[in-house]
Amino acid sequence: MLLLSKKQDWFGNIRGDVLSGIVVALALIPEAIAFSIIAGVDPKVGLYASFCIAVITAIVGGRPGMISAATGAMALLMVTLVKDHGLQYLLAATVLTGFLQILFGYLKLGSLMSFVSRSVVTGFVNALAILIFMAQLPELIGVSWHVYAMTAGGLAIIYLFPYLPVVGKTLPSPLVCIVTLTGIAIYLNLDIHTVGDMGQLPDTLPIFLWPEVPLTLETLQIILPYSVPLAVVGLLESLMTATIVDDLTDTSSDKNRECKGQGIANIGAGLLGGMAGCAMIGQSIINIKSGGRGRLSTLCAGVFLLIMVVFLGDWISKIPMAALVAVMIMVSIGTFSWNSIVKLKEHPFSTNMVMVATVVVVVWTHNLAYGVFVGVLLASLFFANKIGHFMYVESALNEDSNTRTYQVIGQVFFNSADKFTAAFDFKEAVDKVVIDLHRAHFWDISSVTALDKVVIKFRREGAEVELIGLNEASSTIVDRFGVHDKPEDIEKIMGGH
Image (cartoon, rainbow, N blue to C red; front, side, top):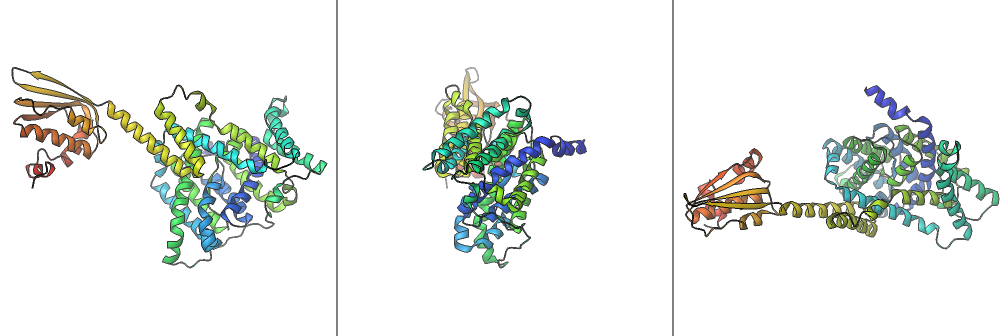
């Protein structure tokens, strides 16, 4: 069974994976160069990183068909390190980033994705779609009409080519777009921006290089403040992208294996002269839309990338940027969740608020981690507030025995603790108070403290208090942290000395 699964991952979609790998490799080249420029390093640093990370994650990653390479989110975090300490410290930070990500994988931090709500993922996707589109604008501002014509023609090819009989289903339309527009640009000798204008392509294969930094505590103090955020942002983007690809392909992936895979890939990148990277949502969607599904597509993307820049650099440099802009606009349109706009009226205010806040923060800061953090925080607060409203207390008086029974229903935690306390009438003259907890659950120390206060206040008013129905989980935390049955601690909670 395992052998069949491995075979399916690698050879279940050979033609689709190889062709999509070519498309992704072509789209990776200008982005890897651009991200290198952002980080302040030579273009080959981003290109070598993209090759290395794609190949390694294809083999050891947890999400088949997902594309990982050098990314803008990671590049932005490296700027100060490169400026202050140089390339060698960046390579050392990249290796350390990899080790941290492997550690996170063994700590099973990939499982934390279960805490990210669907509205945060939707906001993340929409924000990335906007950022991908915005990144294309410099190529469309202050240019000749030829660029607009080429871009429009590229989009027409991408969207109309699949409707052609037979051949439309055989070749990925983004690849046809790139090849066709390159041919037109060369034939007409158009004076437009090309891949070659982005930066010098390397003409040699990467070689193994140990970062030339002293192995001292001082070096660790320099690179650790960069490696930690690189590891966190890299895993965050990778795990979010894996979730999106899971949805697109209706398959599941091993998030903890992906953490380790990204770590191994970054160690490899650092030792081959590359910068740290992670999964790329745009390239992953290009891969999926072009027919890529298995690990072979990611491997081909990395291998073809290296072959193209090293051995076919003269041809690759002639690709017009307008062709790649058309592909990325297609990615932007395909990435954006248009359904989320339609459903704004149907969804609760809190869901919409989380989604919009995630979009605004990511687009405003260009930092995916900030956006997801804000989204998760808001989602948690809204959830706590919502659950807090479902806690209520009912009561009934037995006049024969002068006993008041309170029935607590719902979840008692930090947000509902005050509401729980306020539900009891401490001034009522009764002989006995029964607090029925069969339908309640106590979650934290705040809830236990609230229960202590209720019991102690009733006792101070002269009433006998009996707790019934406490479930096993609640009983554990109440027994551990509660003080109402511990005379020596009662005075402390009531403010006595």
